[in-house]
Every structure is written in C-alpha cells, then in structure tokens.
Image (cartoon, rainbow, N blue to C red):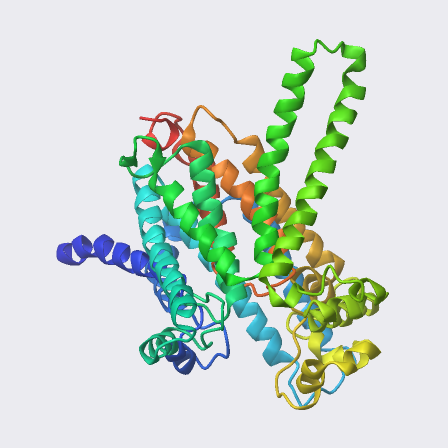
Length: 493
C-alpha cells in the first residue's frame, strides 16, 4: 500500500501534464472514433475523465475547496436541466426524426466537461510551485501549437502547397484539413486556433508581460522574458489564422490596456497644465473626445489593412458594398451571412420562449420555422436544413444561452462572468506580481469570451475554463491558505 501511495502523486502529475500539453488538440480522429462524438474530440477529455475520478473526487472527500464564484454556474446548470425537463412537455417541431432528449443530454455533458476543467484546474493549483509547474506544461503545449502553425504558413508561403507528410500529420491530430493561406495548428479550423489563443495563451502571456512576472529566471538582454517572446509568436500565429473575430478580440484586450494608459495620460496632462478642479470634468471630456477620435481613425486603418490581407473583406471599401442597404446582404458580402442568419433564427426562438428557453441543444429544431426568408438564398443554409442530418447550430454563445436557457439561464451565466471580472479587478495588486498577472489574465479572458462568444458556442472547449481555474486559484490563495505569507505565491522573491 505504501508503494501505491508513493506512486499516486507522481502518476497524477503525469496525467495532469499530459492533459495540459494536449489542450491544443481539439478534434483528434482516434478520440472521435473511440467516444463516437462528432466534432470536439480532444484527447485531453480522456485524461480529464480519469483525473476527475482518481483525483478530484478524493479531493472533495478531503473537504477540498471550490471557488465561491462557481455558485452562479451551478445555478446555470440547474436552470439548464429545468429547461430540458420542461421542453419534454412542449410541442416541439419534428426535425428529421431527431429525438428531444439525446441532443439535450449531449449538451449537458459538454457543460459538465467545462465545469470539470474549471474545478480540476482550481484543485491542482494550490501554491506557487504547482502554479509554475502547471504553467510550464501549458507553455509546452502552446509552443508546439505555435511552431506547428508557423511551419504551416511558412510552407504555404514558400511552396504554395502543403507536402503530403504535413497533411498526414494534420490528419493524425485533427478532423479538419489544412487551409489555404491560413494557419490551423492542431485545431479543427483556423477560428478554433484563434479561440484557443485568445482564451488561454495570449491572455496569459500578455498578462505576464504587462505585470513583469515570469515563471523562468532567464531573460534575453536582462529585460525580455520568455513570456514576451511567446507573446510575439502567439500574435504572429493569430494574424496568420486570418480569424476576424480572433483579431477583433485580441485588439479589444489591447484596447483595454490603452484605455487605462490614456486615463493616466489625461490625469498627467491635467496636472502638468495645472487644470483647476472645477475645469477637470470639461478637460477630461475634451481629452476623451480626442482619444476616441484617434481610436476611430486607428479602427478604420485596421479595417483597411484587413481588407487588403483577407480576401473575404476585399469589397469593404468599395462603393457597391455600401449600397447594399441590408444587414444580411452586408454580412453575406463579408462572407459570414450564414452566421447572421443562424443568429436571427436563434433570436426568434428566444422571442417565443423567453423565460427558460427550449432546453440545451434543442434550438435548432425550430430553425425551419425561424430562419429568415433571406437565409434560403444561401447555399450553406439550404444544405444544413435539407441535406444534412445534423441539428442546426446557432454559432453564437449569447444567443444560444437566451434561446436554450432563456433569460433565467442567461442571467446566471452572466452573473458568473461578472463575479470573475469583479474578483479580477478588486484583487489587482501591482506590488505582488503574480496577483497582478492573474488579475489582468482574468480581465482579458472575460473580454475575450464576450467577443469569442459570437464565433464559438460550445461549453466543451477547455481554454476559458482552464484560464478561469488558474486565475481563481491564485486570487483565492489567501482564503485557501489562511495566511498571506504562507506561500511564495503571495509575495515576490
């Protein structure tokens, strides 16, 4: 028994390391075939299941703690279950003989997977040693993803095609193909690559760079940390993904930092110009208008640059584009018309069932009734409705929450995000670098999810949950240890 107990923690740590390294692999064919699931088939899910049984359940039995902020998520879970129970007694449209219960149970499982990632991460990171070790494994997976992505785009730029060995390698790790002119990493598609970058890797590296925290002692030229180098490589990978939502999401994270900097600059200018107290409000308004004007110019320049790089936006600055005079036509011209149609259909489902929705996973069954007439002009929409055997997907987290869990479930989920944001803002302490880093990290992932939610709507994507678990574990350290100075986690060496 003693031998088993000695092996227990090393084996658990090995499984934890494997889970973190494999996070960038989101849709592995071997896992799809083993679990009989369609798209999100990351091998880390298998490790998650093992660790929940052999580590997390014993952790709870030992009276292990969970973050207080998880309570709204539990409320959301029960609201989702209640909506599924109620929909069993509702007149549900017949859609390709799809059952009512199966998609709902599948959606509940994906939600439980997300909660599993959050809880497991929180339980593992209990001091700075565990935090740094966890970060190293996450870094390793991120480095492999970034290197593979840059190799993909470099090969395309130099050769104009992908060699057979690269395609075979991609087929081993992903259900999706290699895309022309776009980096995919190990993900199903480029937008998923951008999602994982914005929900885990870039916020982590950006927060560490801003707060000057590093898990390594080595620095290039005594100033440039490993995190700064990884941040540059991660941004480069994001650019080559050509994900428009991904670009906008990361730009908004940077905009948050710029706004903070601008507030400081305005205050500095007021002091330098000796602005009197009674004139400070007016001067703040004038300075703010000037800053907003600069941002608008930068936004237009950024959109122009994107139109020159991304073929999907090539018509953005042409006269014909601005003569369309219709939201759906604008969206279709920018090649995301189908998504807007799905959003409109999901919104109409919410309008019909606003309190508790129609149950997780069931909104697509109403699409034949709620798809706007313009949607029938789009080939993808017609294929999805009449040729595909799958239930349509809203492809928008926020509208999905409203349509499938109603205003009740939506409110619980937003309360969870607000709690995470409030803790991140209130816990920021520049004097303690690791807390400063995690405070920034928490703010960035909330900003990121608000925008990435317009592209990804699955609860099973692990990146946001792992980030939230890391952030909460550090910001809760005082409460969990009962002593501010007990761990090096709470003070810089």
